[in-house]
Amino acid sequence: MKLPDLHDLDAAGVHEQHASAEAIAGASASAQLRYFAVDLGKADSKFALLDALAHGLALPPHFGRNWDALADSLEDDDIIGKHGAVVRLAHGIAYRKAHAHDWQTLEEILDEAAEFWKERHVPFWVFVA
Image 1: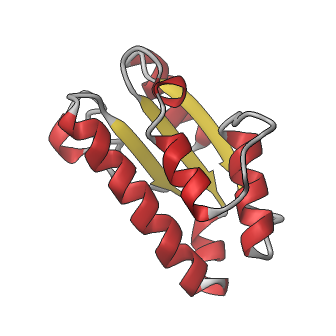
Image 2: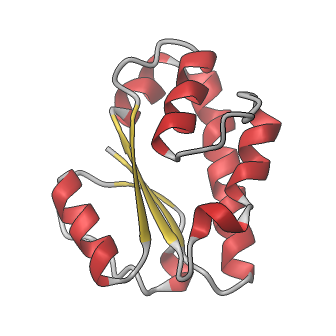
């Protein structure tokens, strides 16, 4: 599946994407966007989901592992880099199917972060694989 133009600020947000991790990482590098790989393969609960996000997003040790802390972290300059960021959620589709309620909350937080950065003219992409 073809990746969108990562420079297209209006299209940035949360998207299902089946491109390989290598393709997404390469496109991110070409667009000079920070790239984060988050593996949700072992996430079987909200805590495990937040732990996987903390690890994959390289959040600080004091990250509170709750929804509010995640929302705050995603709107922090440290996460976005100079030009924007791309997050690939491996096994996100499986997590979404198994934990619909938690996924809905996560997706709302990710959408809000994408809008936050869009208002600042910085792309924030999330690819769910």
